[in-house]
Image (cartoon, rainbow, N blue to C red; front, side):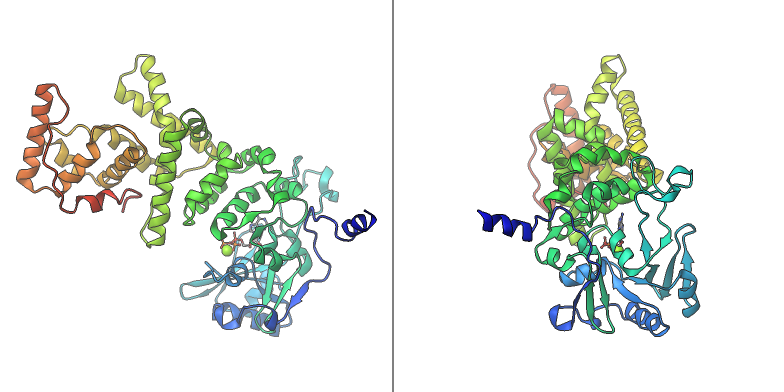
Length: 464
Ligand code: ATP
Ligand code: MG
């Protein structure tokens, strides 16, 4: 009994990941990184800054991803040099940002971002009483433009796995927060007290989900625990920043897993309140439609095909539309205006949370409008629709609805065949439509044309 107590005193349960005052140093024989794997431009920058007498390291996502054998998106450098000092060393350097300055060093198309070590504002800083305070009343950091030491820079980073510093000259890793341990154990863990860190910046809740999905890591339990309760804090975040974050969440190639996590952690309610409501009222249809769309998006990204955010947003919001259309129709509005008004209102409402730019909201409406028009095929209408630049997205969206179990009386298959048919085949298909109408029955049974149609049918996803 005593022995057990003693052991638990010696190895207290780590509720929060506190920083070491001196980092654990891993030399080149203790880790798998090699200088040659990193962008030579980034390595040169580090070398030149060090030769000029500054501290400089590769940091963040590139070190984390390299340890996991993932190709990094970009390479970031952290240094003790101020932006002006960095600029003085490099002819191709530009200072960006006004309040918080960063330096971009350009090498052709590659840009290396160099950031000066930053410090977190203390929780009860002296400015607190004045209107210069760096935090608001809920603890959110409003300004973080204070330079700091290397150790402070590690402390203000979000997750342990993002706070690793690699020195390509000595080939050593500096690990202040047991990040290497968490990489080995596939864990997303916040540095410091999770509640406080989310209060400082609620977007970290979304980042936890993004990295968990991207890396296929678990979210450590103390890091996950406060999320449901603190999720409403996302309402304080400017809608433009949330738009950027949501794009990163859904265009990472792991959108389907991301969605499950967002639902589970009640973050979806904050990002897409109408979709979360639809998920509650009509769970099977909503879930199938959205996950199918996201799986297609993930697949397209893996295949290197383009993906348009409009298709994604159209799918995420679509399940929220019918209830609104019905509500307007119940009040006597005809079907098409009801659909248009509901679409307009839903998008406007969504934009108060996430600022979806006009260049995407317009195509969302067009994809939805197309759903009203695809059943109307008589006369020249079908050919006109086929020529519509939004046809492909609208058709893919129709297949998506069908794959979620929506009953369309074979409309998707009809359009698949129509695209494959030659001129006389198309005329026959249109004739069959009017006969079916005169009979008062559904479309007359047709011989299926097999050529190439199934291939196209499976490509439901974002348009090209
Ligand atoms: P990605 O591969 O998605 O670019 P990343 O880790 O490089 O991943 P960035 O958003 O580019 O992510 O941020 C770079 C680094 O800055 C992170 O690794 C992290 O150390 C730090 N960081 C970014 N956003 C925050 C935040 N909200 N709070 C604390 N630290 C952050
Ligand atoms: Mg990055």
